[in-house]
Amino acid sequence: MFIFLFQLALSLTLVAMSESSLISGTFVIYNGTSTYYLQNGSILFQKFSIIQVINKTFNNGTVLVGISIISWNTSMQSKFLYSVMNSTLPLPFYYVSPYLLGEENISVNEVELFYVNHTNSYYVYLGKGNIDGVIIKTYFYFKPDGLADKVINLQLGANGKIVSETTLALWITNFNNTSIGIPHFKGITTASASNEISVSLFPVYAKIMEYIIMAGAILVMIILLFRGTKRVR
Image (cartoon, rainbow, N blue to C red; front, side):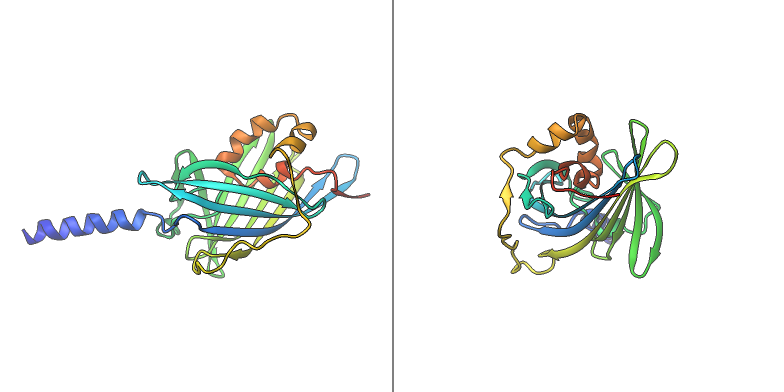
């Protein structure tokens, strides 16, 4: 009987350890910079913030994730986009269950991250993808609590050269302090449709969104194609 109870307790502990610690209302805000290298030698820059919110948690181990982007180049904000994701790896919410950190590969519902190293208290993982010959590489720097403190996204062309790079840095979160709220941003205009600008400037938006729901990181490169992008020659 003792052995049975011990095994039961152990199995329940392992199940509990695999569960996410995310709760409804959890949010993170990242500040980011995107740089685009065009074939004509021009370089485009974009400054933005990305707001990620856990809107609801479900008993089946999934969460409803909401994402909104603020472009500081144009003072415009997209409406929130929503997706239901596994709570242990709810990309495009940059979090992974801390009990998975250190694993060689993390794979949840077709989303796969590959372990790179553990440095400066960060668990570094790499996500990879390919869209029409463009190679996507996303490096996540996860803290021990499971939140990504930094995200670096690279897009490589057919020649192997970087065509765009985005760096995100964690700015504010209520993950460990529920008294913190999402700040109010003055002078920001909300787009009447979440994709009204990106569709006109990026015709394959719908196809790429299929990848965004899985990988998350390149979302900032699609929605933020606002007209105020800075250009350098």
